[in-house]
Image (cartoon, rainbow, N blue to C red; front, side, top):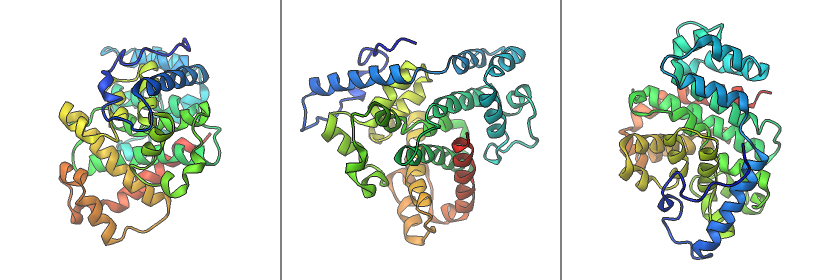
Length: 315
């Protein structure tokens, strides 16, 4: 894939990216900085060709199972991790799948598409250490928690591509670490491990944030539009709610899972005050959660987070 950055707003309206004025830099400077970062990121991280071809095949309503197996089989590591993840309890399959054909039949071609896309994207950051590994594991944890939340409340029908969007919601941070334009260590761990904090510091530093960068690069990787928009707007929930009900619900669950995962990453128990805070938040109210229900499903959230984070951190 070419390393040339796509034009800003080429695939998504510009207002998504620069809807709120940045007092530290002009919009023109922010756009120029973002364009350079997108170009660098696409050059450093071209999307794997095997995964792209498999995703193309899985997008066909008349999917050719043999063709998918043949293509994915060209990457043994992807095949192994795909089967491991497809059999994870969080996907609630009644029987284990031994082949890609069986995985598609039991999970559906769209879910296998999401797994291939997510595994390939996160696989590009497998060798990260320190802060990079922390962010990568957080992404996987949020995907597991978001999936479990949707399952617990019977929201799967209204959350197309939620798992993939949650998995990739902070890919912009991983890309920024690779590009090297932002020194995240200077923000401090209390900012890095808090929801709705890092993106403010990023905008002060370079004029754009990880949600913007991640969404542009995901667009360049040809990820589903609802995934790109959920990543772009996960720090602007109001805009997501206004645009589309499905998008709004995806962003809501990502934001709830984001807050919960930060708690779980610190190995802190779920105290009543925290659960009440989550349930009574704007996102909790939007999704219709309550304290009793959230308390009851907490063990499932912990298990889902551990399972998915473990699967995506394995080499």
